[in-house]
Image (spheres, rainbow, N blue to C red):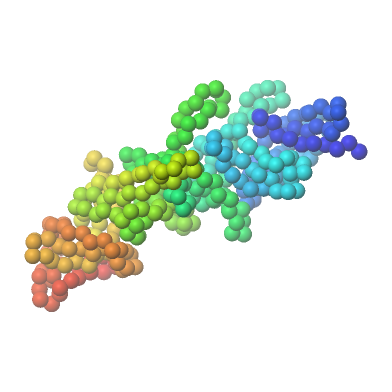
Length: 332
């Protein structure tokens, strides 16, 4: 019985060839799809070439990876290698990112030569790796994940969103363009030397970056970090500066409102232990939402309390209280 050899061509199509010397490679027209636990399958369209007994669906199992050119690669397990070779690289590009997903567009050609474009969606979690690089963990089920590491330096746009740029050849043209992926989330500060960008709090999808100790001043908060890339000896430095102003809200606590022009981007909420100084200021030791100290001290004008905080200041000025807690679930 003649043995058949399956391969994938540069147009993302499955081909089949008999093992004989006169075997002719034939294209099995179809499309890739993603099934449960991000399993890649190839669905063969009917009719198949005459003389070929081909399956209607081919399930491909292996480990997901990301190439240097930002294309998806599936490294087959040992059983699939006997039929399909070592690996499959899908020709295409990442066109969008969600809070728990990645969308990949790929091209193919129909049997009559027309160009076909469609997309695959992988599900999982976004995280930062130990080198502060962006990483997407493809969910394989039963607590197993395949990491896709973006080995480039991400940036911050004017709206304080994380963006990732990559030079990529267009799918339908022989010229390169800059591809930009925008991650829509919000920033969070829970530790002195760690800055988080939350995409989905329910699934813990987001980036926790290791940073220098945050610098907290009256009109800005600044963090510095390094992104260590495989092709560079020195890390790429990033300085993230949040511009805004401090306020005290009776129902929330100490708030830093991030502003871009006249637009409020977001607000960071802290608890704080507050003391008066003899310089007409207040000294604040910042705390998280569980009332744990962050190791961050900030000195601000008493004017941040405005009219609604005068009762709080009077309590501080009394001999009964040398320090009071604001925020962290407490009201004055």
